[in-house]
Amino acid sequence: MIDWTETGASAFAFQTGSWRVRHRKRKGRLVGSTDWVEFDGTCTAWELLGGHGNVDDHFLDDPAGAYRAATFRRRDPSSGLWSIWWFDPRFPRLDPPVHGGFSNGVGTFLAEDRLDGRPIKVRFIWSGITDTAARWEQAFSPDGGTTWETNWLMAFSRTA
Image (cartoon, rainbow, N blue to C red; front, side, top):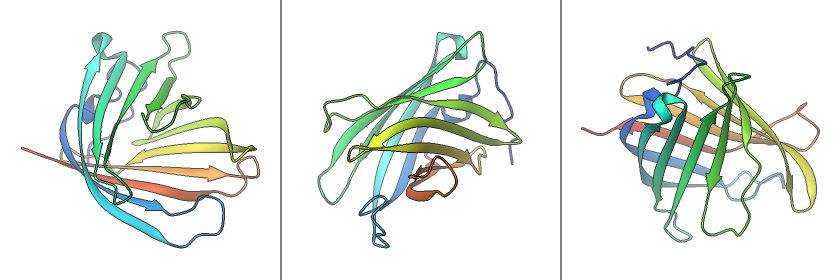
């Protein structure tokens, strides 16, 4: 396994290239739902700004309706932390970015946001990173980070 402990430029270099993505999303978030929907997608990612930025372009074949989305990541040269924005044309607003970095091969990124009018914490985790695979997960916390509900998982498999 590759140890992606890089916090400087190129921390997201592992993602460069083309991927098959298996998605698993909760049907409801922070409502006690135990039902999940699974579907496939693709992702193509590349570095920008000499490794201080990264972007990816997703196709998600969601049974509720296929769509495209993108992620933009930028490293703050002062703090060394990364900020991540998710762009989804189905929604008019841009969510607040999550901020964080990698340690011991795991990337953890956090943000304050709102869900249905109430404040929540958002967490992204990158893990299981190898030359041919990676895992991303999103979780929400309704109580400031004491408890977390994972609501979306992406399993990345590199394509040739």
